Length: 391
Image (cartoon, rainbow, N blue to C red; front, top):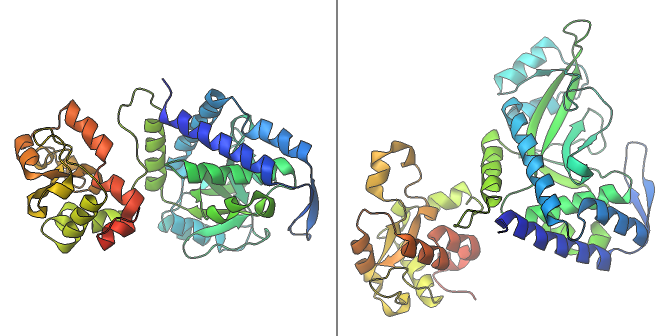
């Protein structure tokens, strides 16, 4: 049995290979650098060779293994990462030398200053800017030092990293973007800064690192011929967000998981459509209207999965997958009980028959089929806000 991760990777690989082979034309690309633009000659043979290394056809099991290994390795470094604020402070020092006053400011803002470790490529002082992952398919870490080309990090933690001056490096960046678009999790890397700081004769460098995700990929993926040599756009994220992505990826890679793993809803959307915002409110009425107009059905068996458009809105309610009473008994669930992913639309008859019990296997299957409120928001949030189906 294939996992969800394998299925998504297979689809992403096919799409990316077809797109690259059909869109990329031969010719020269100019890549900016500290010493000015440099030319890179692109040929069909080079594109095919790069694709064979980065995302080979018919090798989904190997790609899944390497992709999982990337996140497993990343997970070991997350506890050593600094906050986005601390990393930005380190970046804005604009110096390759760190004073003890600088280090103290970084630490006070949630930074972790890591001494050099010659047993780790991540915490070793090397000039190579890009550190590749398993089988050189994906970038694992980016080193930054003051004075790099396009040396800007904005207040939201966004920055860019220029591609290596070869076809494989360029395509590797676009492959990361394709994975971020197709996957329920963003592609995450480490970003690293190193500074001169003498602790003793053997330890004379310190490192600050943070997780970052690939962003702003839709425009680049529209036409690979035009975007092939574009930089990779990244954004600093928190350790919590990194762990969330890693946990979801592990769920995606579980072939025995019966329920589809979901991309996390943005916090602001989860708050906007939490149970207390939906019950007996205009927002809840609009969601019911959307469900009626989009052909959704009650997942319950008592009404035999009656379509919502045949039910009076007053007789449609919001059910909890994990009951409210259960969550009150186990307090660690309390902050999740009213989350849209724990809510589903149901008729009052089926909701009352469930009472405070868990949905049985049949009802769980129907909820999975019809979708939770969170599922509907992921695909149709604007229509739900307007109270109309936009299909």
